[in-house]
Image 1 (cartoon, rainbow, N blue to C red):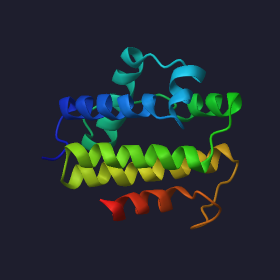
Image 2 (image 1 turned 180 degrees about the vertical axis):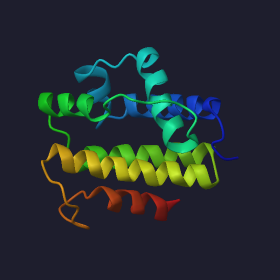
Image 3 (image 1 turned 45 degrees about the vertical axis):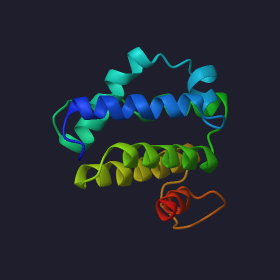
Length: 145
């Protein structure tokens, strides 16, 4: 079944964040550095994904600002974004199949690459550069599924 509603996104995002919070590589960014309160964060991030995938929510927040603050506290690297993409793909694939699920995975990759580039102060994309390049991690995950 595809991602078709806000309720689908809620289940998906709860499962994703459970994995992300527990992950030894990226979990500390959520739990120790940001001190993320899932009760506060979940409605906002659900609005983001509902707008991105279903076009049924209004999201007008600056998604980059919290990531920039985290990056200032402890640098976010391609490895961190690669893990995020891996967990995102695994969570989506574990729950959903269909066009919106595929768009969610593709959008997650684009967001990860864009965030990393912006945090590093780079604007124009260069395909396949540097160790830990995010789409490579996503492709490896896709190939293993």
